[in-house]
Image 1 (cartoon, rainbow, N blue to C red):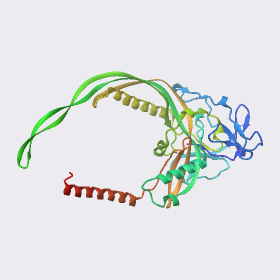
Image 2 (cartoon, rainbow, N blue to C red):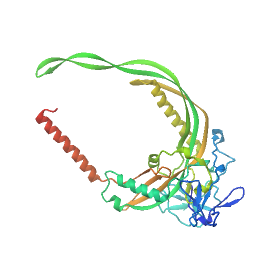
Image 3 (cartoon, rainbow, N blue to C red):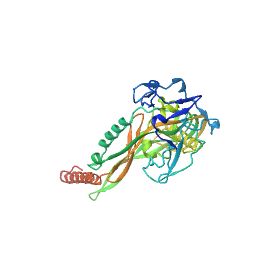
Length: 381
């Protein structure tokens, strides 16, 4: 994983058809992307410099174009970088060449080693711009912290925020038409009445009960579905179990990639190979097709479901999605959390209060004991 850090605004520039610097058109000061817009804003005169919309078209590629030999192979920032690898979590991040040491943005470790960057990373095709700023993300974090259950009573007061950093995380999306032939046995429950004899107070008593049976029917059919923008995570630095909890992203907000969106934020390079991500996408499609065909087979129970899926005309694009990466310290331990930079959804780690959990369990046991006691005395059971 390779991350381009937020750089001093007066040092950021890119190379396009001609050299273009990210400077205010009114006062010449360095500018950064303004979350929730298609503009870059000057922090000095508040002027907004619009990102040209004609550059924001999104291109998709066929699977045969893996890898894109003719594609751009960087983020188009034109600034010298150093790449560091974290010895603790394995993450790679890139910073301004002037920086000698750094901390890992993902686990907070100080143990980082300078390492060569991968020169073959393909530039993103599109991204979802940040819709909320860092202050909004901090407010969302505080709201999330207040709503947590079974946590230490002093967590809200003593949780010390380490810092919030905006990062564009790497993903690939896949489009494909799926055609599935399916067959299987559908079971439908039916019941018959059975008479049996039991003993009550030493006497034989005849009673009846319902006995469940299954009526099996063989069925077959076809299912067709177009999968649009199937999302696959390409980051090894972000904690997967937390990342999935801040979904979904509204991919209708995707715009064509331009380096202007990154200024003031970080951008992580993908560390999972595109072919591996396509294998993951195919598995996701086949699993969803199996679920869809199972729903078509229907019934109360099933057996022998067989699904054969063909995946037709697949397309892909490499995209970036906005996330705020942060952590807080509580009683000497670090807890990570993520904020969806588009929707504001917050998910993360938090300590448990075993005293509160034990108290709840004790209360439940007490209520059950009281109900059993009353039941014996008043014949409720």
